[in-house]
Image (cartoon, rainbow, N blue to C red; front, side, top):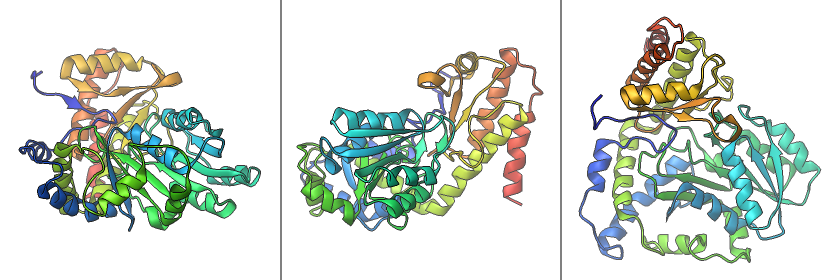
Length: 384
């Protein structure tokens, strides 16, 4: 094991492309100078296709959770009735934010590892006509579930006037996202996952419908006031000091997206998902989610005959490979493999081959190479 070699395959933060690292190493510039205005003017239109929107995408210096809080404080007020769809730990976080701001919060709980049924959301809204916003998670990082956001948005709009507010932190930039066409009113993502940057930026866009609500919302807010970010962005500026090094990196990330093509980016993520899932199937290790609900950016694995923490510890010690464990009640019961952002099919083959050795080291009787072979076959079938 080389001391400087770290195989980071958790569902965020994700590895940084070398060209993005070089871009972030540029000398610092004045955040109110002409260079920064030109940088934001370059970035501004190129973020829109990633979100699938004609609206401006605002950039806030903060973590993904700051984006979730921004979505809450700008759209609803204390006492408002809201619905939060919870399919894992990050849906639960959305609910906790709403509860902290004293919203009347309905928790729509779904079994962890399953995607939400949009029809059930529609039925709930029909019996709760006072709900002003529905909060949902696109990719639930804690379980590897990709929720059917397009269908959820349609169900919400068919049964209420509620805003559709979506946490896309762990998948935007890695899966198809069509905010405008799907009827998403507020969409949030963060920098450290499929966007291939360090943590520190959150991105958020709002529909015209949402802006009407934001403008009239009496909820006090200062740093997270979206009106400030919108008004400043129109002048290619930010209301507060931006993370300039991250903006340098973001500009290069957008270059990489454009060079590969977003359709190809999404296809690469779907291919890596299929390779990973087929590898663990071939190894006889159960997956937490079914194929229909599986996320292209993270795979959750739920073994029944060995401790996930033993495998994680072994591959970390032997190869400095980091995969994630479970959260909350899934802690110690699953492990999660991130395949997002700066990750390729070659990386998946490395992960699978390494984990096969780890499985043998912890005493699981497997045929070496069987998982790798399954992943290779998926790749070959795709490229016939």
